[in-house]
Amino acid sequence: MIKFLKFSGIFFSFLVLMLLPYAVAAQTLRIAVAANAQGVIQKLQADFKKQTGIGIEVIVGASGKLTAQIMNGAPYDIFLSADTEFPEKLYQEGFAIQKPKIYALGSLIVCGHVEGDFKNWQKLLVDAQTVKIAIANPKIAPYGKAAEQALKFYKLTDRLSSKLVFGESISQVNTYLQTGVVRIGFTTEAFLYEQKSKKQVKWARVDQKSYEQIAQSAVLLSYAKKGKLADATRFYNYLYSAAARKIIAANGYHLPQQ
Image 1 (cartoon, rainbow, N blue to C red):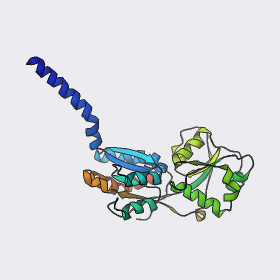
Image 2 (image 1 turned 180 degrees about the vertical axis):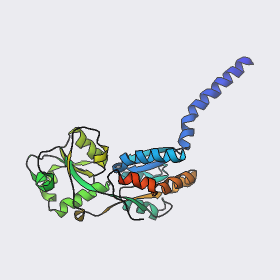
Image 3 (image 1 turned 120 degrees about the vertical axis):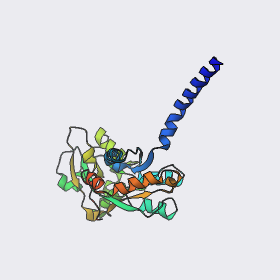
Image 4 (image 1 turned 90 degrees about the horizontal axis):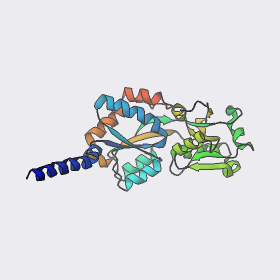
């Protein structure tokens, strides 16, 4: 009998250890975040946890890819997109509780480790010494779409098409730039705030008249109704608070009017 009780106790402890990760996951908010915001979300995540004690699991990817995952049943409670179009689609098709709301305005830049005057970045791109230019996939990444629009605006599309290297998301473009796979590319201004390398990159803002405004929106997802709606709503409201807006503004974004 004693042996049986010991065995039962060991088995119960083993079962608790096995199920613990699932219990923790069930208590954690799951937030899908566009790749451009992976730096700022870490700071928002820490500040929100400090204020509320609520943990967050962040899933990073291209906005279009995350949208497809959500429509295929991915268990995400909130979606922070790099645009408004993808979350609007989710709302229209019943995957979001309410219409998307803008939390940040993005800024497109050209940056890299090349010699030359970045004020005249168009000339740098067409220069024969520039062999590869990185942009995010415009079909699923809003910053890639903005870069494509800017190239078209400056009538550079045909001249540069053979040089373009496409990243699945803006974070992949940033990796290309950091590792030297390419020496110049289009990315988000927030990238400058995520730099850990001591090697300074040169950069220039792309004139906003050359691309559609990058209005980054968030939505509460319908999946949150399955158990995390209260916590998800707290984070959603926090995202538009003075504390969160201060963090967003300090990490390479402009703020929408409230």
